Amino acid sequence: MKNEVFMRLWAILLAVCLVVSGISTAQVMKVYASETKTFGRVSDNSSNDQGSDDDQGDDGDQSGDGDQGGDGDQGDDGDQGDDGDQGDADQGDNDDQDSDDDNKRKIDPVLPPDPSKDYDISCTTPNIAFGKWYPDAIIAPGTISIVNTGNISYPVGWDEVDPDTAFSLTCNSKSTDLDAGATLTFNIVPMDELDPGSYKARYTFYNSDDQSRRHTADATVTVTIMEKGPYITSITISPGKVTLAPGKSYAFSADVKGGGDYDATVTWSVKGASSSDTTIDSDGNLTVSSSEDATSFDVIAVSNQDSDYSDTATVTVAKTADHVVSVQADPSDGGAVAGGGTVHDGGSVDISASPNNKLEFLIIALVSLILALICFINLVRYRRKVKRMEKKLQYK
Image 1 (tube, rainbow, N blue to C red):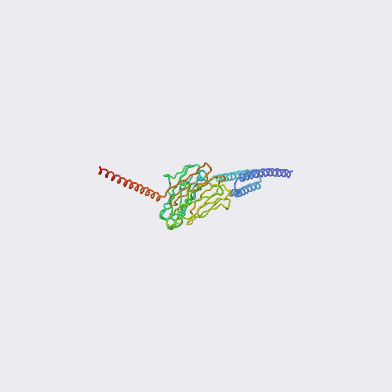
Image 2 (tube, rainbow, N blue to C red):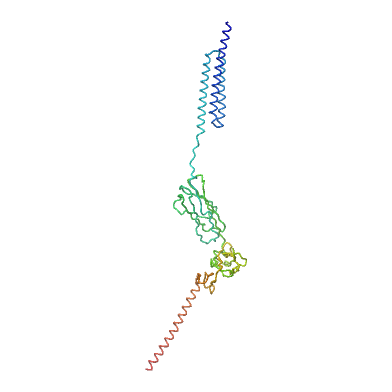
């Protein structure tokens, strides 16, 4: 009888232990699920911390279970509750630490504003070529134009790469501040007394308020200074445009200017004609083929001394032209004439002429001589008339 009572007590105690163990196991699983949900929202680096906290939590639970298993009476289960409270406190500390880590990761670095979103800059004259000049030539300045193509105003700055200090750049405005859509211009000119050679410089313009220089505009400037000697400065074809009918001819002339004992001859050519029979000779005499189908073509004269100098005249082919008017100075050194071309019946054509200054003085001298001769003749005739009248008076 006594043994049955002890067996029932042991059975009841075993049942109570199993119930308490099940409740503890459910609580541990609940806490673990909460930790997994919290740590699942953090980055990879936080996952490493989660693993350490999980290990710590498991150790605490294991220690609590150990106390539970070692306690033989109901009162020791209260110690288990204390362990649970300690586990909850540890969990709370871990949650606070994870929350702080989340806040740190959410803080974005404070960057300065990017002005490049609101402005841009461009150069409408990126290449300025002054060409070839001689040391004693006077070169007209070129213009560099900088445009603000953005939405805000800013001051313009620039850097120059001019290894030979061959150019001088000056701003045409008192202020370099450039409003949105406005243009700022600079004068650029080669320096005086440059030695013969080729010179090149590059200028980079930018927004002075943008230290990163996200937008820039470049301008390149070149000039060539040649050795002194015979040189060409310009070529001009006369006339610059003319209208001709197929099968007609026309005489062009080229006015070549330069310095020293330069070569004033040119090489003539035709460009854009459809017929190979449309030709021009070495003297500028153009012949339009009767089978010419092009509506227009170019006549080109290139200096024989310096091929960098040339000029172009435009010839328009008129299928129904009636007459060709051609003019030339006579004598050839008497001056310059221009104009002429093809004209229809009842139409007109412009012709211009300018006398040579030497011929003008010659004409004036000739006219003066004729007037002097007329005066001399009249004077002689007058004296003879006076003598006749004196003789008549003596007879009376």
